[in-house]
Length: 306
Length: 319
Image 1 (cartoon, helix red, strand yellow):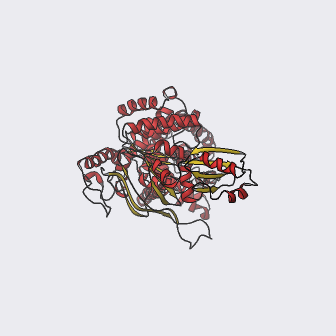
Image 2: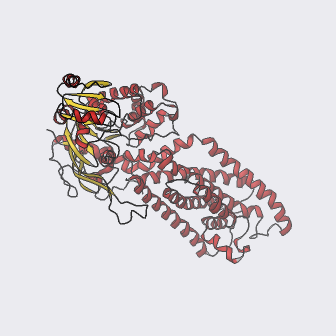
Image 3: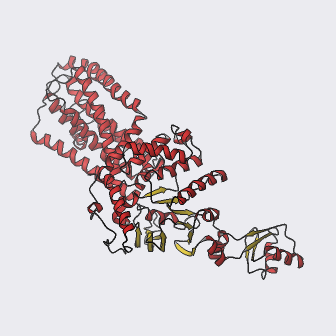
């Protein structure tokens, strides 16, 4: 995904005497082939590891707001698990019985959904403004592109760095879920990786969309309000999708959060679900991730090659 | 002459015109319209022309970040279409607009950039400290980029471009927007690089910058090369030794111009002043007095690239 040489890549010892694609290559000399050999040697590492170098850059930037990263990663699970999973749960379980939703407590039902939502919220931060920034507000992508880095490696590096932050956030969330006694099943930890996949799948598409914006005239705020918020409410997060009227259930079916949440529940407390449906969840999320990723890479190539 | 490090032949870059209905069906916008030149290793080569002449576009194609529409281009013996990362590994690029990372500190900008060339961390750190000294920014290592002055940001951008010890520097309008003192500091740094044998490719619309920095240059206008040579050579070919600049006040300029049309080798009438090209400006001034013309102000100076450009295009470099 990162370092594959371009077609006819130079890694195999390109040489000035070897005419490339009809271009007139000036007569070979010892000095010249030395120049070419040096260029090939110096670019080889970047061709291979360029995506990681971009991720390294992003980690350094994240360090400047590390406090926010940690504060939200620790604060969110405490606030949400307590308010919803404990406070609201008392009401729900009190009225409907301790096994009213999916045959488990409301806290156990809710926690995997909150975990997946936390990945979505990281995605909604990291795949939006940093992209606008890199293309426009502080055009660091152009700076990267002037080095040996290639446009697709910029996108790869961002995905790598966000995945790392997301994994940290979800792992902390999961630790609090355990503390709150919200995970009955032994395979609950798998939900962390499901949440990661969910966040990245949604995030990749969001990144692609953001890369289409040449100007932020409020589109990103609209996404927050009219995409992310409704998605959080109608993805079987706080109540099962089937309690919604039929004409609203489609929101869940297209929502990566619903697919992620349902899959998480299978692992967290063994929610009964046909195996084919679980597979659909995985495939849907993987397809979104791949499509968004490729889309963003193409747009980046187009925007940087001007 | 050794093999050129840059060779272009009929280089063209055009953009599809999009966005407006009126533009539909119209032809492409041609930014670079068949440019050919060669640059030798160690040479300091300039692209001189007004804004919008196609200088930056040419620079981006040479910098292997913009795909040419047609023509031939070889940089360090390689085709940018196929060997982008290889070519860029040997370049130091100073873009027209700074794109330093303002979320990082000064020294960190150098550290992350060095890694983009696959250099080991220890080597990058050592080099970053040397370059901060070179750019006279040692005291600012831990400052925020936004707290730097314009000249300092520019020097940091040059330091960043040097992190990979490039064979060739691409400098796009390196001193535009800087005050005179900051420009001279920058020119001094670039001179040092030149002395060390780094090839410099500079675009500018300042003739003094071109005269300071370039061994040889091309005058570019509307995507085409108008002339090529060393600054002195171009002045000799397209201008006289001296120029007499006279002002008679905006109302009288045109009228006086007719009376002195035959003065010197050539007369150029600008909205605010008249330029008389001659071997001796003083002599032309005396001739004017002799026919009873007394300008409000007069100035005799040596010809510059500005005059060359005016001669070639009928326009000023800075409009």
